[in-house]
Length: 273
Ligand SMILES: [Zn+2]
Image (cartoon, rainbow, N blue to C red):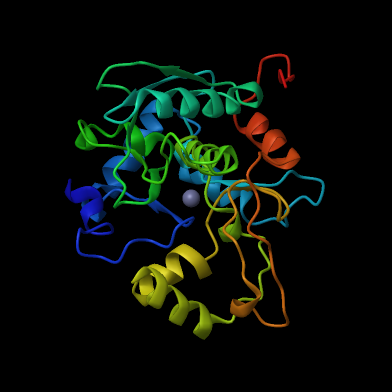
């Protein structure tokens, strides 16, 4: 499982509970992963990125952010396979994940076999993470999990289920973290951020910069949404001037729903929420 062992090696400190990491294909798979994304969806082209990322963001636009070069074909039936775990947990994951399908023109087909596009493990040592969008169906990852839901047990509170499941399935649809949005304006205190994540998660500086401080090259995004399900918490101890976003998003925000509907539109322009 070398694709994510680099990040989630067994001897690493356990990730801070509640924080998720996006897992990217290994460096040598990047070119292939891009080709794979274009083959699945011809709209996943870097020209689109160059054309749309220059202009100022539309202030009327919706919130959330997506690297559309990992977008599934619109209307795709995404099969989901549980590689292990408790059937009670599976049922709750399924029920919650399907909420995305009210707003996005994709289907999640649960109970699929091991060749499903989305393959879920429940390893408690790995925390929560997911590959993004079309990366999940890279043939090089066949047989491996594309998502881990390490904190969920039959007794986990519903609010935690919703926070984690909606968030990780957002990644599986191709969404990036909201705090990495090209228009996120979080006055991070960089030194404190780096010291904090080194201490709590054992991450190195490059990894912290990429996962917390960077701005995504997402080519589709909206104004910054502090209510997005895709947002990390922002403690005021890590910002300048007391800026803070409380740790409480456990539902799809209004803008999450609108944005995913724009990324995966229904034919009639309507959603079924
Ligand atoms: Zn995440």
